[in-house]
Length: 140
Length: 112
Image 1 (cartoon, rainbow over the protein chains, first blue to last red):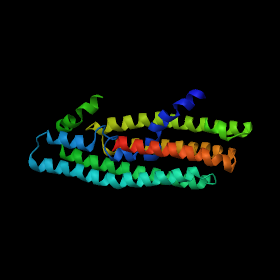
Image 2 (image 1 turned 60 degrees about the vertical axis):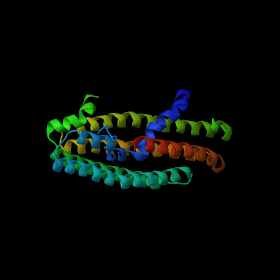
Image 3 (image 1 turned 30 degrees about the vertical axis):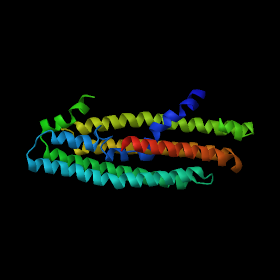
């Protein structure tokens, strides 16, 4: 029991990323591809695609970034609401379940969105180009 | 330990502490489960041949794991809240909330 208590801080640091932010992390690229959108941008430029395809690919990343912002905002806000409820001793199970479910719904929506964005990028890049962008992530 | 200072009655204190252990167990188990799910997601994401359905299936698995963990988390939290008096709860909840808020901030910063 004591060991668990001592490790509490370390455990929770990782946990809250999933509990309160959850799959919203997927929406930013960092958790979905193992790479940040900034790094992906750089790797796509390094492919030396023709201008039209490069513009298309970079536009996908731009829209991804734009889509991620409200997801982060919504998750953060909901996370704060959850924390407020947890602080109140009289909070009911129904209230907590409702907020956690809303957070999970937001995560699920964001994940579907990310999978769609990835499809757009996949349609632009050829397999060898894709592999060059994500090569290090595939090996790790 | 805050609870040992705040909760004077040994029965209530033990109930509260048992709740904290349950809560930490849920969090720890969910951490392990979701780390594996995220790893699978990343693997599928970078695989050119993996289609949208493959990703959505892993995301659905995460959703199920998250729902299960949430239910257990809520159960443990409510057990803690109901085990102590209002006066005892106030400082304990405040400390817990501060910890969670700090961690939430750190987690968000690390992923942006």
